[in-house]
Length: 302
Length: 309
Image 1 (cartoon, rainbow over the protein chains, first blue to last red):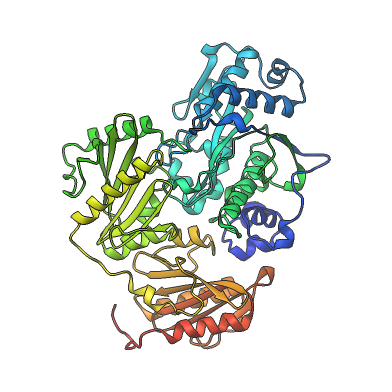
Image 2: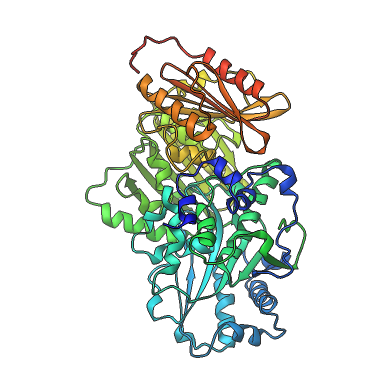
């Protein structure tokens, strides 16, 4: 057992607020003083991770349905911003090769009714077609993905507050790559990131795409439509921990905005701290993340 | 604004029907087959052994109460959004109230014993039953139909159940409206206020507990009250909270309010009396934390030393 693993066992709320490494997570979850909450975040000059967030008012139609064309453009714009490439094809080629066999892992989440939107999945498939990765070698599924046969993975998930894990986004999206996913619920959710180190999964994830069109920030276990936000965003990154760290900040701020006062996320996403400090999947430190903000900025919150 | 993935739900219901069609009990008679122009299209039922098939990753929230079985019915009407009704047998009335009180907010409405409505979702409890009726999309028409289905179900449930008696133990001074939740286990507590990843308060299915928000002067605090089966277990929990959370070596008298300063300049404290434990967290100062603990303990019933539940 290393030092970090030791620190993630037997934790109390007070430990979160006092231990370095965990304090930043506690702050993002909303457990902090007001002064700390005002600190600027995600503005690293020499970032360990870059995250691109694109929002477009036109992503949703007046009746709440999704505008697929707008969303496809949002995905493309986000990937261009992330890679620094001006042309979409060049951007996607920075991440994938024609010879790749790509698995798109999305979240169906029927019971919670916060699935990855098909339009976001289609936007990724359209991007892969530009590489071009032949359509026959692009596999898209929530469960039953031929992960072992894939040379690259795209994690395409939704964002939701979760009654057991605190929050579910990119890292939790891989939970059903394990044959017994329920082992990661409840007290042991700190071990959730170990799924990413399974031999058939490790090192294959080239792109994270978070569907933030209508993220869910409320209580569970089932959906309460009062807590589904009209956010109209898509977030992309190559670092899953950084992506979820920005998502955590957004989720908490959506909660605060709804209540008009702090509404901390509970339980804390222990797995996010573990993903950084114990499993070394990326950075959860807001000071090491650079967030690129594109498009509609009103109510962006992060 | 939002849309259900009804295809996935229908597939799930079909799977459940196929798996359980031979042995599943009949749906309760108060679940309508047709109402306000909507007709039941799919039905399924799940018990404690397979609830995860319906609520994958969230069943634990119901299993933390005395959940027995749920019936799920999808109602359809041509050209209109679908409506899904879920009827949960929670075993006892207290637990039907408890599940509803996990989120005590929403527009109060006259359906069943206690009901909340918001954005197309009606939640209510009646007797040992907890009910959710959800419209795929809220319109004046679906709101009316959701209410009609809910009232039909509520009117068909003859049993009554009082709210958990633990609610009556909460001191009224400073109690914030619609903030109290009745629960049993750490899973629910951590969903509402994370104390620790270990079971610091020795909570379990046999403990009754309530958590509520209080206004204390210009600040706010949370009060947690727990009733144990035995006073000895209460004292163990008090001692564990003292050492692991308050981190004080001062044992003191269990019936004396013990308060310490925590991170962020807040205060937390504990006080025990018989089988009852009172805990205050997030208080703005030590004096108000101790006063709230004293008020909580002062309202507790006098019991014989080894009184039964």
